Length: 461
Image (tube, rainbow, N blue to C red; front, side, top):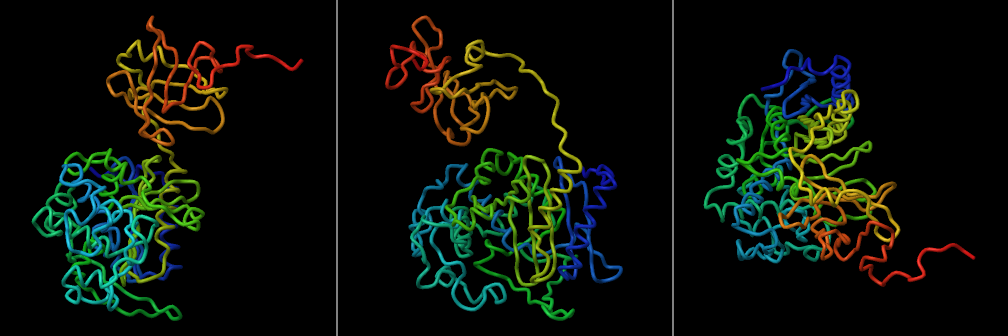
């Protein structure tokens, strides 16, 4: 159910409208439509247009360009979760003979497979896909321009390969698999490979004059998994909610967290700019906020989907011009406006239904050397370890059911936390990836690596 727009305060709604109005006017976009989603429902939609009486709404289709890559990545992660393939598999294992098979599935998803940015031949976004009927036409004679796995280098042909991988494994076209496994389960009835009315026309706006030129609309053929889709602000809002929360019919929340995790080495400029690429998703840092999603462009169209998982706010911005409004900045601003004006109200605190006494025996203060840490048990059944004050390594841990715990994030992600007990059952210390945490600084009764000075603590004298 769509939440009424009145849920947002009038001042918030006006600020959102003002932001897209400025973007459309200053960016000289023929039209611009935007949607904000919070709590899994649309809470605001707005549009601006240069044509009187024909303002688009959230159900008008626009081309979404490379946001298509996120859809393709979801299909690949589904194959992984089914056990059909592993992200560490070389492409050659499942799709032999491409000449780029050394790259792994994960490297293709993260644009670190060393492939060229674009296919050879004429500008693929403005020419028919029939010019590139086979993968060999997409890759060319020299598909690799960097060593495989060494650096992030955005590659559209890489996603053409992933689309072909989906087709090979599923035995059906990428379009059919996408519709059956993602679009229909999520109710994205206005997302399609080819336009379905009402849809916007794509325009190029002259850089030095207020005149326009219509852009061609081409079927991209083999390159479709990299940028073919048409969609609406409403459909992409629902897709954003899925990307933030998961849907067991399509992909779990755990797999989507993996998709939102940086997976490619970036250059210094990207680090400074707060940008990283994940598995089919981008991360941007804007105004101190972490935004995940993807941007997209094709001749005549600009698009951006941005999600702040922490704030539970997402924004979609679509425009029908080749260049103009900075849609990534606009989407980030829409998220910021809502998150700052009407911050997320946390769920009520609730205690655990029951707590294992053995776990309660672990909570409290611990020391790694002289560094003070606290171990806490939370209502979700996880334990968290972090410094009592200041910055430092911290992580949540999930129970393995055998008295040990596995780290979920940060330095301790994947590391084993193991309580070590004395013969009488009391806890001697915590072993975390060989680090010994004790109840007192350098506890002489615990097996501190290197031992503890027998003279003990003393002053200067």
